[in-house]
Image (cartoon, rainbow, N blue to C red):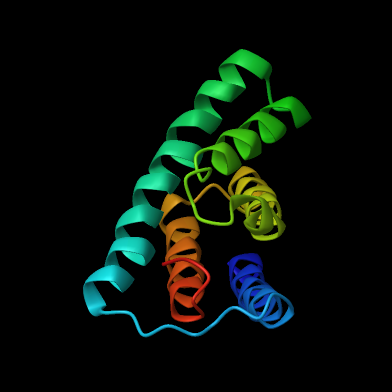
Length: 130
């Protein structure tokens, strides 16, 4: 559990730094947008990427690096529709690796979903995802 907390704190700092470096304008979001991006999207993504695809990847590729890399590529690729996708790769690639490695080491779909919810919520409030 400490690694999940550490990853969340590190992720929040990374998001803040990203918004500072790229001068992301702050936006005011309504509750519906915040819940949609942070809760709904995060839970669905974690069930899909970590809950389903990692298990499928283990069957196809084994426990090694290939399973991790494929999971990250799919995670990043599914975000291609985001505005400024190329710029957001600075967030998506590290997040994909951290989520995948955390879940591989400590497989808990509830905890990984909570971290993802928190980080997506912060990203929405910082104006990164809208």
